[in-house]
Image (cartoon, rainbow, N blue to C red; front, side, top):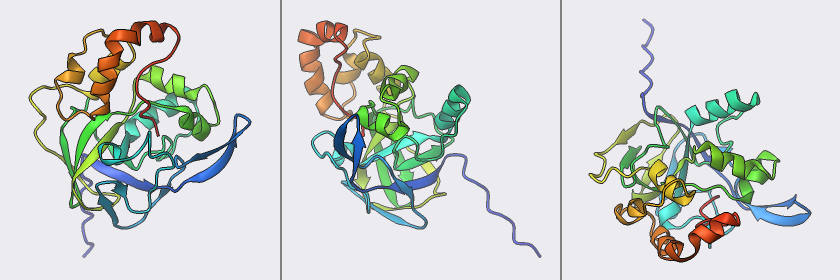
Length: 234
């Protein structure tokens, strides 16, 4: 008798990826980045600073407890494939977790995910920096990614554990404030002048409140010059 194939979880991690700092020649400079990541087969330990085997090259701007894990949706990579006519395999955005069945753009700040034995919490949208341009071989791509409003999300680790490709993502109840990654993005990119999404989501990464303190003073003028908020890209 043939053993039945177990059902695929509707919300799941398709791929787990890690990377270490490497040196690249980019825009006539020698730069270091960890944005190129490789898939991992089998269980991967995840701690408060991220996945085992994954190291950040710039600890000032990336990584740390509020940005321990980066997730990007397979559905968004499929959108990019349709938009550009080129392949976007899992890991194209330098993510640690490529998810399926989750709308990450509208993920609620503070919502929790049980993945394997780890418990993760959404902390903020990712904002792209030059390293995404390096990954795509296109210095203009970070602006294109920003314009798409498909940011993926960064997560903190509430409970350390082990994750693996194929794990279900079990979402906990969303916080009552209902503030999403998209809401934070709208403030960041100047689509909204209402700062309440920054102040009303206590689970939001703390550096956003520092940014909001300054934003009321200089943001509108800096926005005219093309300078926006905190560097949270990978």
